Length: 148
Length: 308
Image (tube, rainbow over the protein chains, first blue to last red):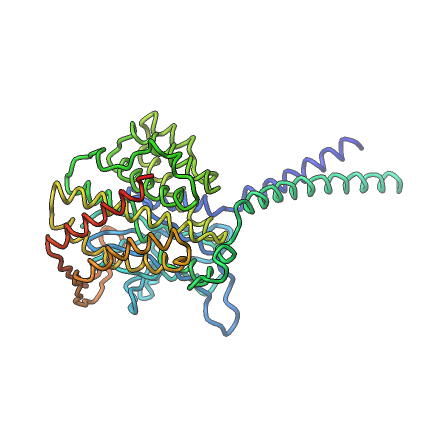
């Protein structure tokens, strides 16, 4: 009987630890994204966790603003947590215009990263939401590729 | 049999309680740690914040990047010079939170410059100074001194040295913002900016180039964003002085003219990679005379900041 208590306790601890190990942390996603960014130099990361969109409501999103410099090529890398179904869509805006996104509606293609060749120093806005308004956790990494 | 089962459940409950106690102790420790140095800006500034602390978290990021400034200098083929760097000899004289935060920014920019040129021999002095200052404002836990020192000493994996150091600065910044200590975060940004400007200015003095002139001119946009951040704390005498100094630079920038020509952005796929090309044009007009006035003013303010 004593052995069965011990086995049960060890099993409970194993289950708890195993669950903890499985959950992907923001830091793990940042490290992963830095690998995807390849030889680009890490500048910033944006961590986003959003709930699923409620029926009849707009998809939830998050906005970040960054300064980007003229004659510079930047890379936006996107890493989705395997713990959630949501796939992040990153849209880059200047003051009032959409400049680009990692998800092309026309082709249905989702890119793990995209480069932005910036020609004007200023404030840019990054909007992040999840495809189909699903719940998700993602990291978007901004890195420096080269001076143009 | 019933007794045995009861006994088993009782023991099981003890075990689960123990596990929960251990788990909660672990969390509690984390929480206590995060509460360190948690006097929020709203208390320090007694309701005088022009922008709410929540709004400050939405404020523009990447205002000044040590990586980008250093990359520009290196891309021009300008040789490394230690003369440009702020000395770490008097780090103990950074004896207030204000001085520590702005010093962190200054040394952070210098570390970016050293890393860009792979000058690992000097890196250790700077990471030691940064660790001291970071500890001084209770964000030292985010600066992985041991790993950085090992990487620098062994002269290995220099990409990791850059990655970890930049990320550590971002973690400090995030922690300060999330714990409503955005005033210190703003000072770090100001320190990175003034030192980055100083580096570019000194390089422009010795090796002038159109790229550097333009870089100095475009800082008009960056400085206006930075001022927005700093002016939130203008009731603080230290900030007031810094703002007045930066306003002197800003008044010179009034004569820098920036114009735009809008173009349509395009998305192209090259080798399976998505590239977004911005087809806008930005023209920056700045005379050499004005540029040198800005460089001189920046150098004077930067030297005042590091002269402790």
